[in-house]
Every structure is written in C-alpha cells, then in structure tokens.
Length: 370
Image 1 (cartoon, rainbow, N blue to C red):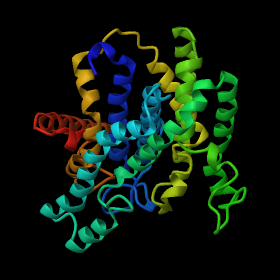
Image 2: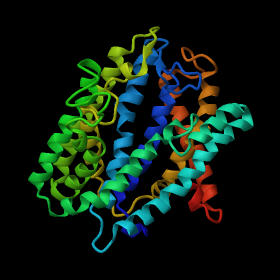
Image 3: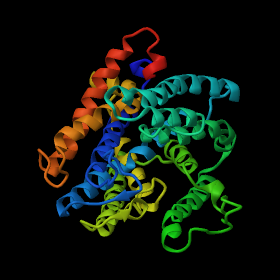
C-alpha cells in the first residue's frame, strides 16, 4: 500500500500497540513466579515497588494492546469489499499471516535448544502439539488464534454490517459490553453461568461475546461516530483514564507482596474482554483518531510495516535482555523497577525492529516476517 493510501493514525496505533505488548511482557518478569520470567499459573510480587509499577505499566498502559490490534484489523477489513468472495478474502489474509506464524511456531519449538533453553523432550512434545496449540516457549503466539478466528468471521458478519443501522449495532454492542462482565462473574460468583456446565461451554451470551465485539465496535466507530476532534479527544481521554486506573487498581488490590497467588486471581480484571479494558481501549482508539496528519513520519510508517515480524520475534530478545537487567533479583534489579520495565521493553523493541528490517531485505522475507 502506498503512503498516500495509508491511514496515518492506524500506523501510529500499530507502533504504539507493538511497544505496549513488549511493555506487558517486560512487566511479567516482576510478578511471574514461573522460572521463564513470564506470568505462569502462579504469581508473586517481591515488594510494594514492583506491585505499583507492574500495575502501572502492565495494567494501566499495556492491557489495551491486544484489543487495539483487533480493532485495527477490523477497522481496515470490515466490511469485505464488494465483489470479494469469501475464498478470495481468506486466501489473501491467510497467505499474509500464516507463513510467518508457522515459521515462528517452529522457531520457538526448536531454536531455544541452541542455548539450552529447553530439552529435546520438551521440544519434541511441543512439536507434536503444534497442530493444536502454540509451543511452550512462544506463549505470546496465543494471540494468533483469536486473530485467525476474527478473519474467519469477517466475511460472515460483513453483509449484516453493510445494512445495519447505528441503532442495530448499538444493540449488539450493548450485549457485548454486558458480556464483558463474565470474567468477573466466573471468578466471584460461579465458574458456570447461563447454561455453562461440563457438557456445554457455550453460554447464553457466547455469540455476543469475545473479540467479535471489538470487530463491531471498529465498524461502529468508522461508520457511525462523526464527532469533531475536540469531542473525540475529551471523551477518549476520559474513557481511557477511567478504564486504565481501574485496571491498574485491580492488580494492586490483589497483588499483596510476598504472597503466592494464582495468576488468574491477581489478573482478575486484566482479561481483554472486561468492562475496564473495553472502556480504556475505546478511549485510546478515539484519541488516536484525533491525529490529523496527512502522512506519517517515515519512521512510523516503516515500523508499522515491520510490526508483525517484531511481534512474532520479540520474546527471543526480551528474555535475555530482562535476565541481564534483573540480574537474578526482581526486588533489586540493576535499574530501579520504574526504569527497568520500560528499558527492557524499549531495548526489545529496537532489537526486534532492526532484526525484522534486516530480514525484510531477504528474498521471500514475507514468508518469514510478513
């Protein structure tokens, strides 16, 4: 796509959201009780300083990263253009994302063997499971599966979105917003709600929940919200601040230092389809739409194009960078925690950007880094 055809604020979102993902994973080193440094099934905070800064960087700032990528995809692709068949849509989208995805599935399965990061037994077990899920050393690749699901459903919902009114979409979005209460209700009321049981995992709100809601929200923003820039900025800032503050507080509330706690409980309001994350995501997306530039700086455009490859490879850099800065002591790393987290993220971002750029110069690089 030529620069003049690009949507400038989308390029900014891609770059910022990519950095946010790395900020999230940098933060996980300061509360994850797993030996990998990332958040596993159990968590523990070393002190109050870690408690505050993880809540700030991972919760307040980073949680919107995944929904932002979902909204960006839907904003650009929904509805499917007239005359484009389902087969054509699938072919174009999946030829773009699947080869690099498969490439990095294999890299995260075997590459850590080179530095003793995993055993042959673990590697082969991961390899056998590749048709069914991501490898153990590539936990961030979970995102690709709901993204693929979003692509699969886009041609299905596009005809409805083409003829739906703003009111119709608001009805669906209201149901979606209500469904974002489910993670809270599952934790604090009952693990089984509205028809859920061991023989049925599809609840009453199943088809109105999940990332499909962000897809419809993207279409609603693009087609039906015609607010002036000032209103977008005011409403966007208010929504982001309220959502981000609640997200940070929710972690701080449960994250008692020195106490081993199940990660789903310390992250009780960090799922991407919760009311607070939805509110913050809507807010920050509206703030980005206030960018009125006709053309993004060359650096932003370039990083936006590289963002997929950067996302795929970033854990290969983040783990050693975090290990060096933490130096075996999350309570007292080489840098103060308030600085250590963003430094880990920024160094990872720079290394990933340079490597992706160099790989993009190779023949057939689109099959490696997109």
